[in-house]
Length: 382
Image (tube, rainbow, N blue to C red; front, side, top):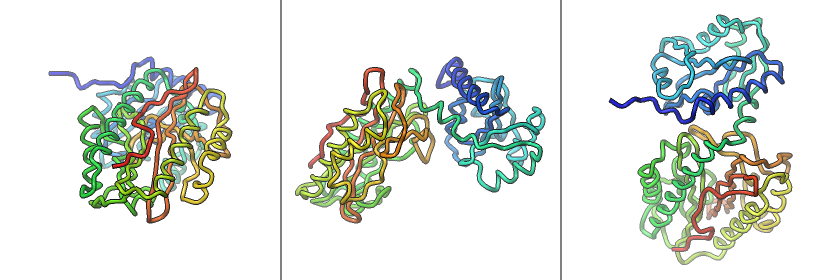
């Protein structure tokens, strides 16, 4: 019988991540970090599963190995990929916050400076933690793990490249499936099928396909909509390998193609091309964003646009593949560095009429950048 053990990375890789987080704890004079974000826990421990509502926590001490906490039922997942042995399981019916705080007391952290992630510990659980740890000092440390995650290692980059290949296959299949008389479900199914058969795991975001007037609605997706002549079709896919995603967006237009749809798609392409040309080590994100805006300024002020030129991607779980707060926007002070990886989310919409999009996943390299996805960077006219 084959072993179920299948870690995504070497122990040395996890130890390197841990040491960087612990250095940040020392700089903040924190004794321990309490991690609840599922992606951050996976990044530091290796554990993963597909049941997003299951409670997991990782206790990261200022020195020494992490402690993983979850129910007895979910702890079986740790046998597959967790690189250390300090695991505490509690009964499925137990209160997880009480169980976590009990471990903190038992490990002598009950009166210490404890960093926590406010975005992932809701108000009820935060107050319960305060009551259970009256002598502790709870401090916002939500940025510590994402700040480490934003620079990808060589091993992470290989997974991102593989994910990009799957996204490219998925986009190609979706575009090929587009035709008058077909449905948005047909296109989504084609993309999903080829990505999963190609090796993708369950995705952070399922294929997004939205047709005609629905393509002018942000974050709408397939819903048995028949494709008609003259429709624009907004597509976004993201293959996933070892929890690493490389998103890709394109637009299909069914003849006869309205001139305004073609103009919107061309504007997305032009802005994206500027991003590709400008994204390199040492570049200031706000400068990159302003140059990208100049390429499509007339239309981006006329149509709906979300205000972000690119965001960091990497390790993720549903409902998002964004992994760190690194953004390329007009007010960002971020300096691009080798190892950062971005989804250049370039899209325009006229509400309830049409939408157009064009994006790539782009890795910042020592010499400039590497595009990890790739279908023709043009409006796909059918």
